[in-house]
Image (cartoon, rainbow, N blue to C red; front, side, top):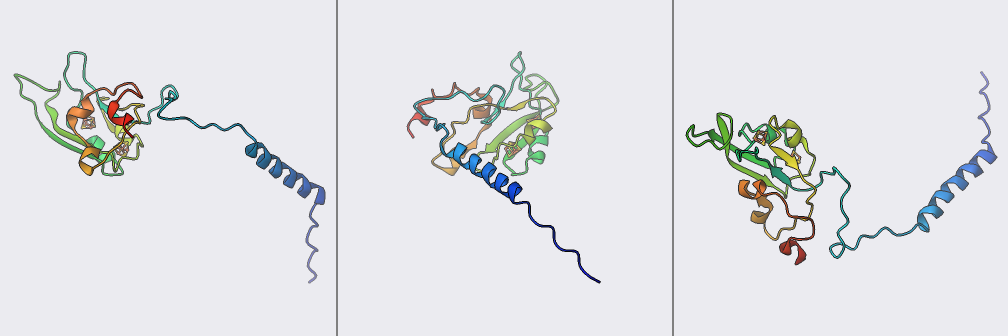
Length: 165
Ligand code: SF4
Ligand code: SF4
């Protein structure tokens, strides 16, 4: 049985493809640089971007939204969250539910900012902010406590600790 001859390459088509590829190379080679002079200039992140540290939110009456359910910790693929729940004191509750987070920690050496913990939270207690200026000099510093996470982040570029680097 005779085999059919292989189709001949279309030379013009190939030259066109090479020209198109080289056009992309030249376009990228001579494009204007887009270097940000951080930390001298703080370029505002895009609106609604959630690329920074977490925030543990409170209700308007001051009660914590977190009910210590640990769903965020279960959802985290990096095992970065530690939650210890406890029963609320009915006379002086910390959160509106029966339970609250007695301890809450996020390890930023592990966190990959994927947001799965935020998705898992049933009370919107946990959100990501756009505060990305995180730096640490020790493992202990990278593990944020509940008290730290309850504090809203300062505006970007205003934290003197972050300016030192
Ligand atoms: S953002 Fe992702 S990696 Fe970070 S604590 Fe949440 S679930 Fe874990
Ligand atoms: S942050 Fe949300 S998911 Fe995590 S323990 Fe608190 S209420 Fe549960």
